[in-house]
Image 1 (cartoon, rainbow, N blue to C red):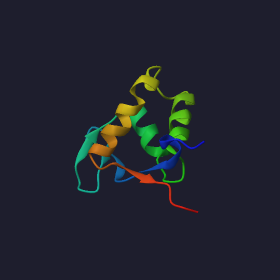
Image 2: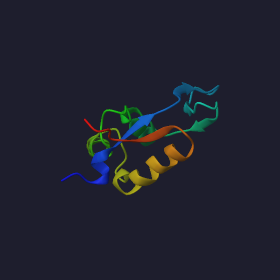
Image 3: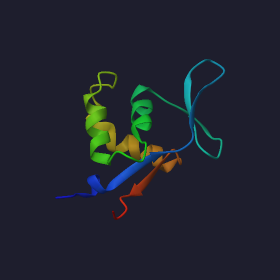
Image 4: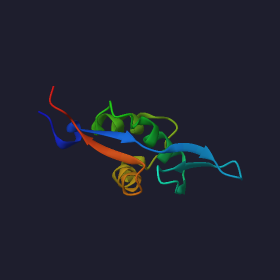
Length: 95
């Protein structure tokens, strides 16, 4: 049975870059720059528009590169990325 998590395909927007201090940042399509961390980068990179939200969450939780508390923070990470136009929540289209 499909749930809302199975029917949303997050799509990353913007790009990764390094700032003047060589720190990785995310830049949204409007040119706003956001400091980031490993959890945000991994989550953002998984948002390719082809993987459903539930699978992105599962992959992020399994990654050895994410922090131990990502399970609690995952919904907030995605909401933050979407709120600053770094991720678009794309509903599944009819096949």
